Every structure is written in structure tokens, then in C-alpha cells.
Image (tube, rainbow, N blue to C red):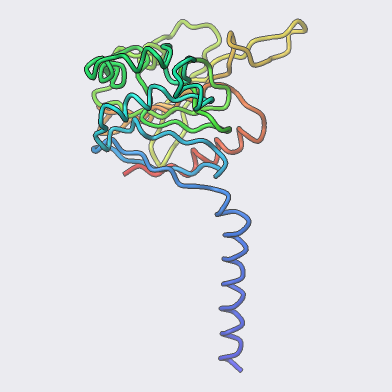
Length: 241
């Protein structure tokens, strides 16, 4: 009798695990990011677009860098060279003509540059965009020697005069992070709305190695309830190694 109960109990556990997998786990994917020194992972819905080619973990060939810069929503048109890609402000026809050294300079963008390429990006949709505001995109950066940089993120963290900028904190993977929440715009009735002038952007600063290094998470705009729920799950799932 005890053996039978034991087998029934095991059977119930297996069913619960299978139900969880088919209804929850398979709807998410794990994204791993590493620049060779700092590594972290997180979960996003399986339907989201993911870009990690700029993580820095693997050394890319120049033609791979050229392909990265030429990435666009209309792949056929991009290959034909007659449109601007989503990853830079230069027509693909011009990118094809650049020398190897010019491609490397565009791809790497000095870490001190005002807005370098992220180490990884995810988006609720089919495409990642770096050439304009991406309303449902989250960009993730790894900065070594963060305090010495001159990026947009340094500028915002040190800006104590910006009107409407809210400073709070939260814990991510057990680490106290600084959170900057940007104001929304207002419509004719004075109600908050999301526009380019007021995106509701949120930036998370996660200090590592006694504040020397930093993981920065940039949610470009406030989204709908579904997007915000998925982003909250992303934050909860972050694991830093």
C-alpha cells in the first residue's frame, strides 16, 4: 500500500512538472550575455527578438561586423543596398564600400562614446532597432571602469537638475541598483502619454566589483501591461556571475 501511494505521489509530481513546462517554461527563453569577463543571464518570452552579436564574448570577423551594421527589417532590401538599416544611420550600399578599419570603428564605437552599442538587446517584436526610439526594446550594457566613461548613462546618473527625473533603488539579483525613471509627456487634457518627448524610460544601474564596473539596463519606453509584466519578469530572472 505504501509503495502504491509513493508511486502515485511521484506520478502527481511528474504531471505538475510537465504542466508547468508546457504552459509556462516553453513560453520563455534564457538569454546569456558575456563580454568574457562579466556574465549574466535572464529570461524573456520566446516570441521576443534577441540580439547578442555585440556582447564581446566572441571575436567577430569583419564581414560579420558588416552584416551586423547592415541589419534591417527588410532583409532583401538591405542586401540590395538600397535602404537604411535599423542598426546605423548609413545606407547599406555605403556600408558595403567601407574599409575593414572603418567597419571596425563603427562596430566597436569606443566605450567612452556617448551612446555605444549595447552588449545585448531584446524586444517585444520581430526587430531590434538602434537607429531610432524602439518602443518595446530593452538594451543591456556592460561597462568596465564605469565612472571614467562619458556616456549618456553617466550623464543621466550625474544629472541632478533634470525636471521630472525620479531616482529610486531596487534589488536585482541581491544587488542594490539605482533606478532612474524619466517622465511621461502629457496630452491636451493633461493626462500622461508616451511620446518621444516623454518616453517614461527607465534605466537600472547595477554596480559590480565595488562600483568599479556596471551593468546598465535601459528600457527605452513605458509599454503596455503585457510588455511591463514581461519586463518585470526579466528583472526577477537576472542572474549575474
